[in-house]
Image (tube, rainbow, N blue to C red; front, side):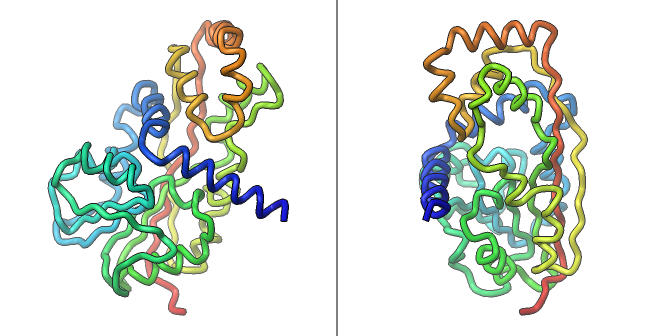
Length: 266
């Protein structure tokens, strides 16, 4: 019962976080401004998809559409999210370049073998029933299609956790360790139940942050308990971060993509 209550509370928190793109944008902003890899995550990921104009593509959990801003107009691409607010943000940000649809991954409203490529960017670890939703993804993917999904490992952004816990050890930035749900370390074994060919591709990057307010905006956008503590002691926290960041803060990034092929027949 306690685990069910925890899951329900976590799911409610995730829904609140992602009912629109505002919290997501605060996190993207940190990476856009302070990544040491100047190619940038979204450009790298889009190029890694290796899409042809004729590929039928389904993007799930598309956030604010940042991944697709440099993709030319193509009505073979359908961008989706379970949040109507996110889908509206996609349409507002990208215009009439693509198809848009509100979709829940446990019941994807397309026929079997509909897509050449399915893309999930930092999304799978938020799903409530990963096995059911991966079955749905493999169902709508053509036999020779590709499923490309991003995630990160246990070392990702670890310095920010260290920073907030140094201020107050009771702070956590996520009620779940998302990389334990689906991450770099366990992703291949999870995906291997649905695909015979699973390859990890690392994105080489780090952050060097010297702006206190951008870092704090990132921290308060997270989906843990940090705001219960930080907002009541905001000036104290800001002064603490200023002292800790006097020479800037270097932050580890440990992220990449799994490229999956050859669907396991059920």
